[in-house]
Amino acid sequence: MARLNHSDGRIEHLYILALSAAAVFGSFLLNLSPTGTPYISAPWSDTPLHLSETCFSRRVLGISCPGCGLTRSFVAVAHGQIQSAFRYNLMGPVLYLVCLLQIPYRWIEYRGVWRDSPLWLAVCKRFDWITWILVAGLVVAWLLRTAFGLLA
Image (tube, rainbow, N blue to C red; front, side, top):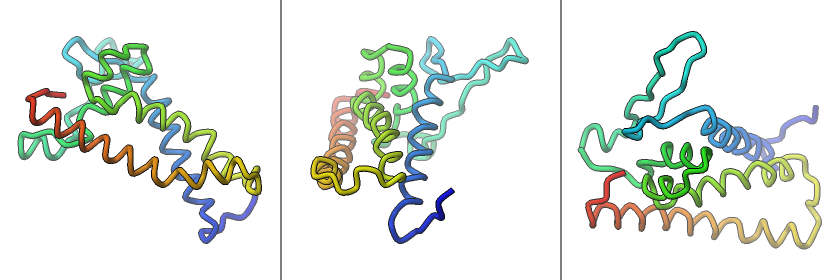
């Protein structure tokens, strides 16, 4: 195995690859209850294991954050429930697609193939502003949800 060097960003690509893969593949393992609570069915038990509320903002302040509903949205996308996914978080399906695309992108970057390809360099150059557009989209969707009383 090649030696990882922090200076060339390979370790960062590996971390993001792992996180993206965990988010995408994990969404297939979870299900949504009729109330929208994510749960996992344990093979050793007839009782599903429900995920607890993890949003600090919602738990302590009683208001949602820009990321509220993303887990439920990812699970809904993984199970083909696109309309529900948008209801849980407007940016959820878009971010799911981005996570899905991160898997081949980060693998290619980690391996260093196509590093000198003009097309690949153009894709990488635009990646930074795409990230900021997604962050802005999350905030705008959160503001709309908050302003119109839409609960995730």
